[in-house]
Image 1: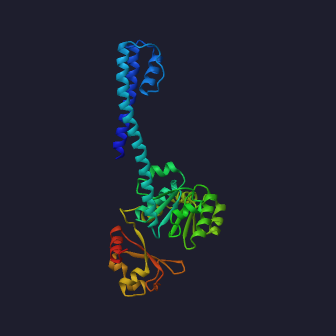
Image 2: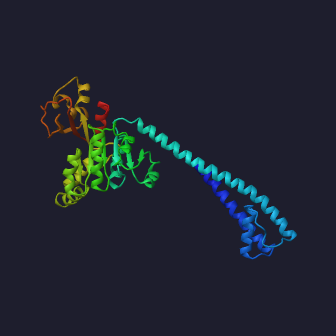
Image 3: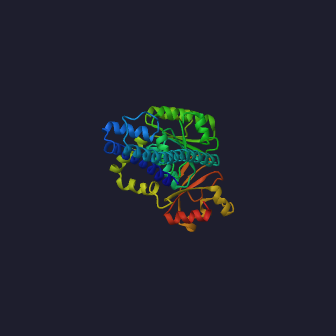
Length: 337
């Protein structure tokens, strides 16, 4: 629809310019006016403002003026109609799009809120999209929102430091929040506000300075990530242990279609399919799916690397499995993850 409006808008502007040029050239060569007088005569004629003529018009000039007035009235009427329709249609479309986006956000439960759509925010959104997670992006830059809002991304345009904006993003119903704002002070304020609005929210914050780490943790952040430190460590590791790091990158960072090589599975999901079998040996994932259990997350949040086969599975715990994409797919299919 907007393509049609843009086409009609272009035609209207082109007709206005054309009728003006015809008037200027006509008065210049039919009436013998100078260029300035021709431009003036054309302007007062096509706009019908009623000023007096530069000088007395001869019969040919009068006929030309009559034709110019009649033509310009129709063209101006058409142009005003098209421009008004374009402006109102665009405004209505924006309002409709905002209302639709608000309804979608209001329907979300257990979603992720990403504050800031800079380099780190975009990377986080890309990862969330690859895993099919519901999320809302809070971004203050209106131009940035307008540029990316057609990419099936739910945006809330505003300052994440304001409680009203976080509530609009559904923070009371959210499961997790990622604060990826460029300034540590802004991230700190957002973490404080978010923790007050949702006590059970999992908060992951970006930090640039070492001194901000403890402050963000005290403010209520569950995890604090320092991208610069991680990047530096990673590059140094590629020098010290290049083969090992590249292998780990292939396991944890590189996607294979919509699957990865590592998956976390809640023990409760496994119990439903295994009649309450209580040990790693009992569920026998290696034989059933080809996946290998490489980690066990206990109820208290602590981890056991490479757990023993006799490790007792707790209902609120989870296991981390390793496998090729097709093995992970078989695991997801078996437990309907």
